[in-house]
Length: 400
Image 1 (cartoon, helix red, strand yellow):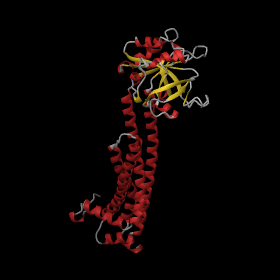
Image 2: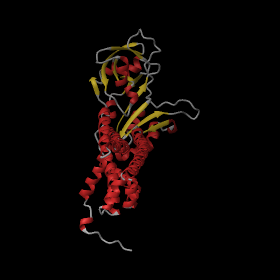
Image 3: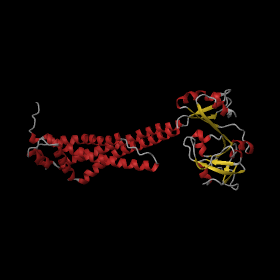
Image 4: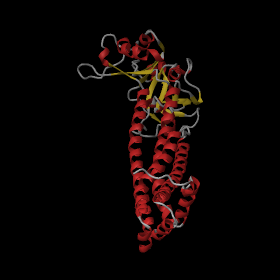
């Protein structure tokens, strides 16, 4: 049988429904607050996870954009007999002749080279700092900069002068140029300290000296241990395919080529995986909050039978009763959702600011938190609302 339309006077406007739902919630403020808290925690977890994930992703993207993805590094591998291979002395010049290569530089590890603050410190206490000979165009190729002092030049590379990476300077306790360090059995003057190089952490932990002084004073054999190459963005793949053959034409299998920016790309993938995991945990918390709202509404129906019976006796029909309790559930969840969104935003902003990340707030996460809380409220209030609507005036008043 088709339903008979209600006269306008029997219908409740949205404003009236909202006010009636607030009256029901204000009558039990502590219970309503505790129920909304469950929704707030779930929404806050989801917003914070998405917000922090977006900020982390933007920070990595900005870092990749700033550092570039067009740098390749070359390291010696192993020979067919399992021995450690060496890069040819002339490999830098050979790579420079490859088409599309814009710049190439190299560093060479000084074997048994240690750096200590003084000669009184035991030789075994190396602090994890390596000694490396370097070409003069290292910073140009890597996109690095000097924090204080100057980098090596054509004059200072001939003498016992060194430039320290950011980590090496901290471990040695050197805060400014002009200090001396005991390097591979000789006193070297620190002429510069570098800023950190995110794509090249090995440089951060190194004491760099000129190529000529390393060969003449430190018995460096002249073989580079790492080549750094930059090429045109569109030619990176093509250069990577021929780089091993260019470095060592006789034994290209003994050359390892890598792309440092791939590590940052891997971090993006790992961050996305963890975001999905924590988002699932937030969804579980939101679901638990929905169960709490449903439980609160069921108890509310049981406690307010007399009110329901009185309203039915005064002419309220089942649909109005159903709408009242459903609206209470939705409003309760909405208040929790709005509180959760605010809490999630504060957590995101605080965490991003503490890490120096860009402040990114995904609008879809904020809107999604509010919409999700309303849907949870509607689902949670559906059964209590139907249960309240099924009560007849006599049943409600008799048990009130």
